[in-house]
Amino acid sequence: MSLEVDIEVRRGGFTLAVRFTVAAGRTVAIVGPNGAGKSTLLDALAGLVPLTRGSVTLAGRTLERVPDVRLPPQARGVGVVFQSLALFPALTAVENVAYGLCARGVARAEAEAEAEAWLERLGVAELGSRRPGELSGGQAQRVALARAMIVRPALLLLDEPISALDAEARAAARVLMREWLAGEAAVKLVITHDLEDARALADRMLVLNRGEIVADGAVEALVEATEPSGLIAAMRGR
Image (cartoon, rainbow, N blue to C red):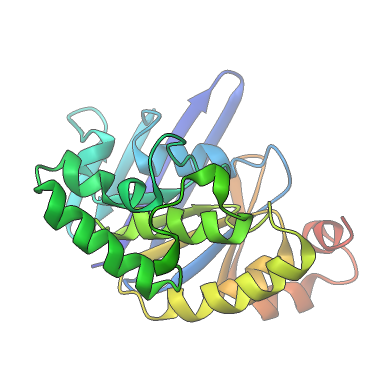
């Protein structure tokens, strides 16, 4: 049930070249400065940008292998929570969460019942009839998480999942999200530029810089080993 990545992606003059493996159930933070390649990695795993070379395998299934295999995003078993959350503004919270199941042919009533159960699991069951514009940042985040998880993805990609929250809401969200992530069997990658988010949400950290992995290990060990100088220390001083 692991994620195996060995890829190269070229976008304009930028090249991402990385290789790593993550076991099922693990939460790994992908950190690095702006322009390091974090978003390119997320897009490549989600199937939003093609590989130049290499392959991605998830739970024994090849999602992409140059030149002969490339599954579309909807067939990958990958859930994504974008930094913007990307909720559909005209749909209620329940309808947003149910969308993925409906797109797979599940009857609307069944999909919405499952959506309500996911909203309850994340502590926002009472918000089912509200639209995104009526939700706080933390509430919208939970709806976006429910929408990603309802399709039972084998890989969950979280792009700066709590960066838009204010300081008070962010502290609470870190606690809630860590507890929730720890209980999920999927491979979970948290894309962030914030070391405190990485420390709160993950045990392992991959550090990207200029399209390459420059460090890979336990979060606390990496942070302590690179202080008071180096890339991680520089990020900590942002």
